[in-house]
Image (cartoon, rainbow over all chains, first blue to last red; front, side):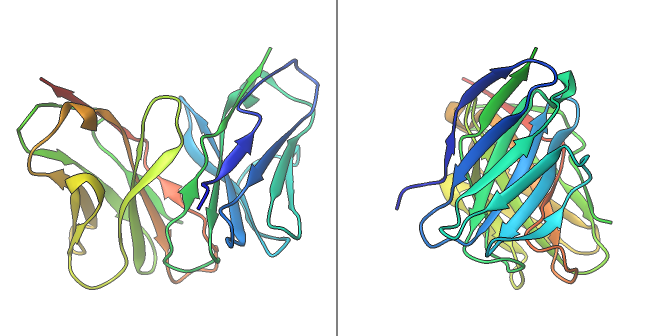
Length: 114
Length: 116
């Protein structure tokens, strides 16, 4: 089985722009979660989507949003980018939600905001 | 609220020696506990998990972890370290009794350095 894929791998934007990141989960997985990784704050949960519905949301401003499509692929969007949004954004997939299954992570998208 | 603490930013060990990476957690209910490893410019790779049952859990690449409920700890161990084990290790917890889906709370990470 192919793993979790994320596109693009690297992205450079300027303050005020918006960005869309994409995640394709492992085939058959219906849950997709997003995490932000920074040197200062570590790994923080952004949100989870399951069957096209947002299941849970972390403590991030409304500039961070996401969606999931019927094929379980997910996108996250960050509007009005700030310097502090520079981070590695990781997507993780799992067969279902709220169970003991581990999550499988993609390689991440490194976003740099100038 | 749930939280994870990894008290050591870095652990140094000589190749061939045993290694321990420490993790303590706090959840209101019963925990699901996970260890992940991250190599440079890569995502997180799953190592092992504790769900229920035996307190000693065996995982990938010869790693194991011991769940201790009274000490709320889940330390990662390996009997004999390899240079290739050098990486960033994350402990994570999920409260099985809450309604937070798959949300994981991660510790700050511990960098493991194995010297030849």
